[in-house]
Length: 173
Image (cartoon, rainbow, N blue to C red; front, side, top):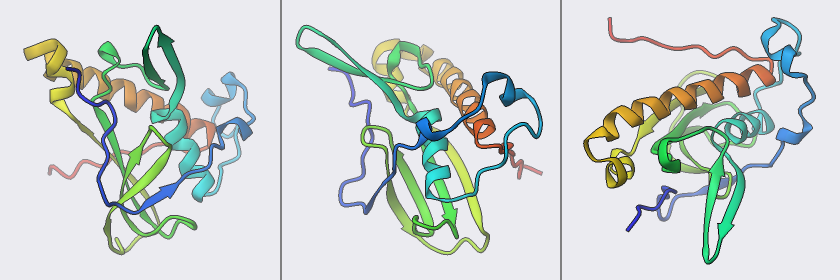
């Protein structure tokens, strides 16, 4: 049987996010023009739009008695092994700490309360390899890397729509 494509943490405090992406007004070309889009504030709506447009559900499909979700970023076999986590501090409407994004109902599950000592948002991605291995066997690792690339691309466009630039941290040195 196919693994559940939606990770949930039972008993976690849930913060519903507003569906706010349709309020964004920018042309496609504006995404590539520095300064063309006024930066949005880092608030509940901004975090919601970032996650909605990069990891959210875009549609439901149905055939016979089966139904399945489509997401905003492509995935090999529509298995979506990539999970998003955010570390939030000082964002109005979201408790400080580590949260897991639940695409099924567009919400954040609180995993750990703490004050990270900064104001802003850090985003981390992880892969659930067995979601891919169920269908693709040993190719799962390669496909998970491919799906992470799709997720990063979707994040790039969602951030650009908010007038933001994504940054990466390399702490390996």
